[in-house]
Image (cartoon, rainbow, N blue to C red; front, side):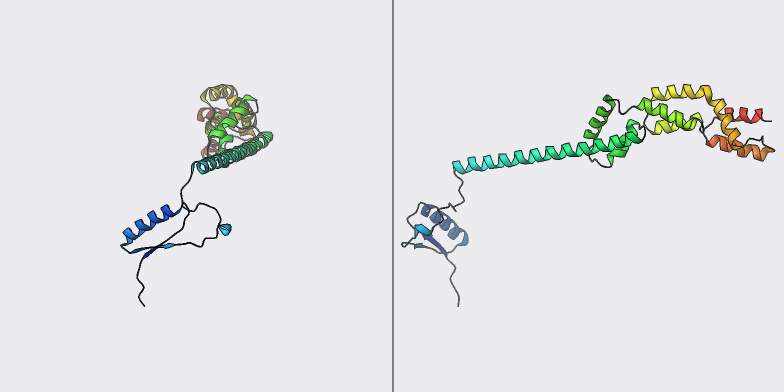
Amino acid sequence: MNQENKVLGCVDQSHFADFVADYAAWAAQRMDAPLEFLHVIDRHPEIGSGKDHSGAIGIDTQETLLKQLTEEEEVRTKAERERGRMFLNRLRERALAALARREYSRAELLRKLAVYCEDEEPLHALLDELETRGWLSDARYVEQHLHARQARDGSRKILWTLREQGIAEPLIAQAEQQLRDSELARARQVWQKKFGQPPADARERARQMRFMLSRGFDAGVVGKVLNERN
């Protein structure tokens, strides 16, 4: 059985009747359908919810909603600040644990911690704090690095490593001067520990030369060491 399409508006004596009539007329016009109103006489207000379902937001409701949204935003902001504080504390603990084991350059420590941090801005702030407190020092890192490496490596290799760790050129220049004064003596020690005997022929001389060059000693210094043993 075909059923005629129509818009049925249910109204009573409440103040919502005007809204219902307006929306029903609008729907009937959009649907090109006949409009009928059903007047409800026998209402039971004692079981009604008393809530406004018209979709209109009054002034009091707007203020309440705005207050609620503001409070929720404050809670979120506070939670984000707390998460940020805890995150920085974890980064600080990682940094201090690393520095407790050995010296780090600023660039080296930055790379180590960057894997835990998408934004490097708070990380730079942390490194600034560590430098201010004297817990992080490029100068101290250079001093330790020279002490650990100069007994087995030449100046070129040591200086290259310092540049790889982001050490500034003024500190590298100081290290270069310090290494230059002891380069020949250190080359002799490395050669003596590795070979101890002068090369018997050209092939052996070339082998010893390659080894000393791979340790970062200058070719002129290596030549002097080998010539002294002939």
